[in-house]
Image (cartoon, rainbow, N blue to C red; front, side):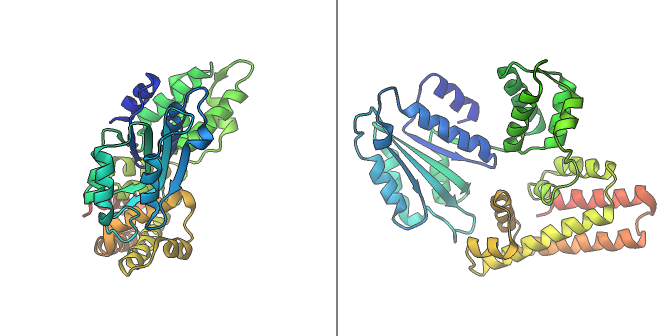
Length: 346
């Protein structure tokens, strides 16, 4: 199911018995989970007695969630069971739903309780693994992909319009350029701009520049994020923005190298059996970066990361020795070639 289909169904009051919400856009994913929860209960329903929130952290938690979904509602038309912490990873070591759960999960999904709604909120849902395929195959499975600039702009325009605030297309594009693809931050900034637009109820470029700090300078993971997604176009766009803003190519290569070396440490630790918490503590990962960082580390693996780091080192030497052309144009070409190669690396 597309996220637009989910929205339309919920507006019509259609609620399915099973939902599986996954993907990198966690703000929309979590908002969808809250919206579903609000649609489950009607006026007069005793929500407190009929809502269970279960995080998968132990072997028996999934069985506990299914048992809760099989209970009859008490003084309400339906029960709601929200299951968080769902992880089905590429390697399988940190899975919270495992193949030994298959019989129990299949049995419930084949005949879900008609008076319950169970919502699986996945932090990671590998589409190749058997249990990942099972959950992704559900009619209520929704992939919340990272929004592209055009979708972000549409989302922002709609939010401004809903608040009765006018903004022209140029200002919308300027806002997206500054904020980037962090939808949670974009939502906060739009709310801030709506309040600041009083009494005219109009948002201009000047108001955006006065209120929102320009963070077009490279964040500590933004370029790496694009690279490991194999998003060559997006990575080059980010690179060109920061180069145009005056960033030094040697500094950018050092930043890329730093992030890839940290991923190498994470991949090596996970390959040797370290759990997620150990990796997070050692590398001091910020909460918002954890999922992406660890997923990318697993996807590339130690072999792919070794090749990438070697290629980064070659570019670093070339930049410092003017190999491949000197001056700003030559340096720019070298780092653009590097970024293109890393984005398409296997």
